Length: 229
Image 1 (tube, rainbow, N blue to C red):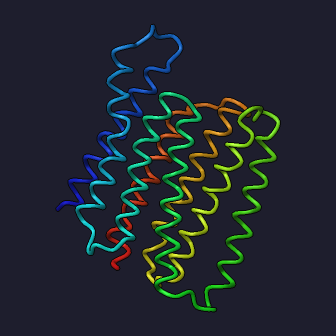
Image 2 (image 1 turned 30 degrees about the horizontal axis):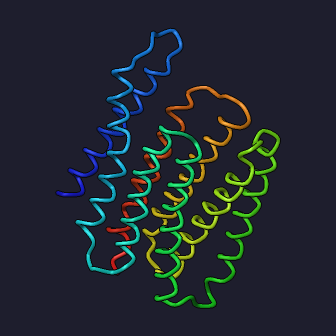
């Protein structure tokens, strides 16, 4: 019941913001100051709902869930920060990703990392590093003064992706792939932001970036149903 209500509210607000922001950025239209103000209020609501859902539905007072709530809360703050500027948004989202890394790694260590996970983990880590290197090389010419913060952020989110994969392996829960998929979608969303900001414009950026972002945090919030610690 609560999951259905959460899902409906989450996607209603997410879709409402995507549609409003797409409308606001339509070049032929005149400035839409009132619409912009409303959309800025709506933007962080899905992340706030995700944090609230994890907090309310957590099956135990385990630190894992509480740190996940912190991470999703910083996604909410990152949504607000991105309206101020790229650097505040990056900084707040990076704290969120560090929270996710902390949750994933601490829980993996508490479960015990057996030798059987070493081979797939090494393979996935190599994949993440190759993607990180290729993305950085692709964006590097246009980074300018953002070079250092973007490089650090890209490394942190790559580590978050690997940590989510490690938790899936150590938990032995097949459904854990949903959370890893959410982390993967988060990397894709942030990569699209990097491409748009530092390399080239592409069609329908709002739908592509925000659609993947909201899907990512929705899937990450499902840890409260997938990982029952």
